[in-house]
Length: 298
Image (tube, rainbow, N blue to C red):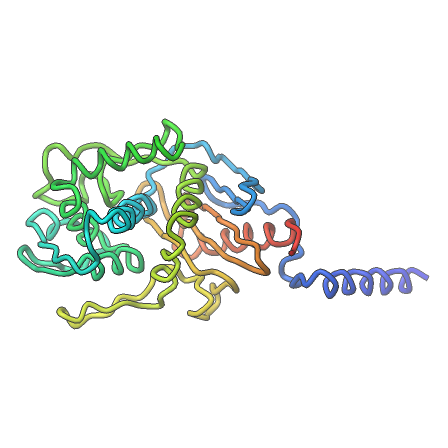
């Protein structure tokens, strides 16, 4: 008798899966997250599906480049700059650490070339060069970053100090004296920022979903730091993932703001502060599986 009920229950579950179009790996309960903080949002409704320490400040490293990307795209849309404008690489930009392209002082690239490597490879030297090109100095660009943060409703716990998210020690020997302090951000604010970027500039996904980009002048190729792209394949690939931004800081750990769309539903996930590069994608998978299983499919 017990076996009969068990089989009936399994059959009933299978019928639900088929009817709703839900994948078996999406049938999960609320996950336990092994990270400092995490947030999951249904982008269309803005409903927060999960919030784990989402108001906790953390050094977000490269994730803060979401604001840099937003201001670049906004500047192009407003006609302040053009994608084919030449950008000169300054001494300061050429000397920042972390993910970088070994750009040299005096190198010239277009806005579009540098933007692509910021979006895909999170290149710090490219980000600084663009910030200086748009605003005249990185300090003035940072002021604009913080004004935009207030404008779009980010909390006072999020504060930008440079265009890259790097700590002062990583900014190199040519860091201007007016660039000081550590960028801080909350997971909730990162989620709100990502939603604003996706809503106002959905074309960001064309850049962020590329498997790799090239710098033809330098003869090099940079692979995407997002291992969850569905186009990449591999153990971390996630069906529907097409962005968005990774980050790493030696003190705060590994971070990832991801987004994926399935059956008309787009989710935004934020994982801050895992111990390993791989773990940020493992934890993101938990969030996305939970989100797609707990939201109504169109």
